[in-house]
Each structure stands twice: as C-alpha cells, then as structure tokens.
Length: 274
Image 1 (spheres, rainbow, N blue to C red):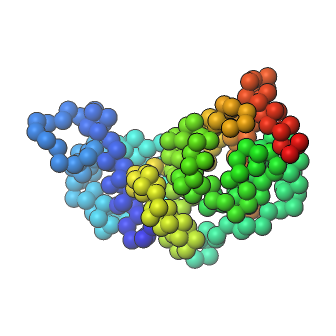
Image 2 (spheres, rainbow, N blue to C red; image 1 turned 90 degrees about the horizontal axis):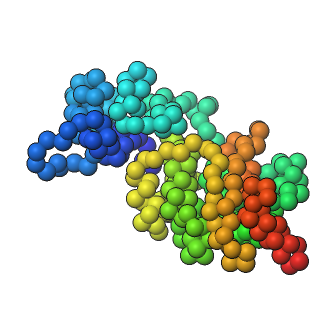
Image 3 (cartoon, rainbow, N blue to C red; image 1 turned 45 degrees about the vertical axis):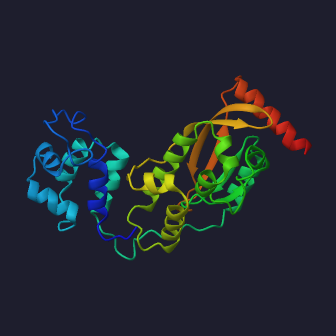
C-alpha cells in the first residue's frame, strides 16, 4: 500500500491471472517468460497501443478514459466490482472527500437489535475488527468477540482454521474484500498497519494480497465445523449500518427446517445453559 502506482500494480497483477487461452489467443511456440498475458497482448486486445499500455503500468499516465478502462476490464476479465475498483484508482479524491477511518462506536439501537437476535450476529468495521457480538456469535466462535480482527484470526489461529470447512475460499474472500475496502487509502495508517502486519505473519495473505482480487460486499454460505454440534451450512449476510461508514451488521442464519437450523438451535440451547 505504498500508493505510488496503484493502477499499474493492479493492471500487472490482473494480467498475470489471464492466460492466452482465456483471452482467445493461441500461444506461440517456445517457453513464455511471463505469467498470463504479455503487455502487448493486453494492448492489442484492448485496442490501444503497446506504448500507451506500458505507460499505464509504469504509472506515467494515471488518468485514462473510462472507455479505455472498460476495454481493459474486458480483456482482464474483471467483474463489475473489480471494474469499479479499477476506475476508482484513477480518480483522485480531495482531502475533504477522503474516506475517514471507520468509527468504532456502535449506535445503541443497532447494538440492542444485535443483542436480541436469536442467531449469531456481530458488528465489524472496515478493517474486519469485531466491535460487538451477541452470545450466539461467541458460541459459534470465541473469535467473534470485541477487539478481535476476523482476518488475522482466520489466518493465524489454528482453531479458527479448523472451524471453517471452506477455509481457502473464506480467507480468499476476506482478503479480496479487504482489498476492495482499502482502495486507494494510502493515507490510512490503520489500514497500512494491518496490511503490513499480515504480510509479515501470513504467507497466504501476502500471496493473495499481491493478486489484487476484488470482492464486492456480499453475503455467502459459510461451511463450518463446530466442535460441539458438528457441521453447519449457514448463510452469512452483511448489512450496512446507515450513518456509520464502514460498519456492517453480520448475521449467520440457516435455511428453515434444515439440519443446520436444528444444530444452530442446539447451539443456542447450549449457549443459554452455559
């Protein structure tokens, strides 16, 4: 997150993920020296000159037109979220509109709502720090507790890794979501400190962060293995909290009538008795 050439770093990382076959090209004879597409191949497919694309990757032109970015998005097979992210890298923000660090004070009404929910629920900020959690959330995982960073726990705590049957997908999704949140926030020391710490301590984080994958804020199905009740397939929905930038109310719930619903009710009974 040095902020020096974010667009160029993104373009280079993403073209390395696209093979010639993905782009409809026939690889020539001999060993290719680069992963993914060559610069000149990206330029040809996007309908721009090789020299201009080189200037983009080198950071000598940081404000291409939206039409050029749309063409590059097609070549690099970017979805809507990643395309929006890329366009954002080329649009400088004034100091008055830069994103502030997320506040860690949860509105009392939202806190009450979360506490009364009969399913696991917690509130996190844009750094994936847990700000508040109800009893069911803590019963699901001790790491769903105020002060715990969810991504740090997932990557570094063996117990959290054992909880997630889909750990590779879950961590990849979380890292890509953090990348989307970080955006061009090179002026955010808190985000920089988190990224730096995880880069030092986790090979997986370092590898996936370098890919520049982007995930839109969206719910997913979490596949868990709880030591007390067994396997759970839970919907994980993330709801933005109005007026609180970066805060999300995260709720786990099961399909009504499913085995996961029965086991989640059992977990609730165990949490109540303890």
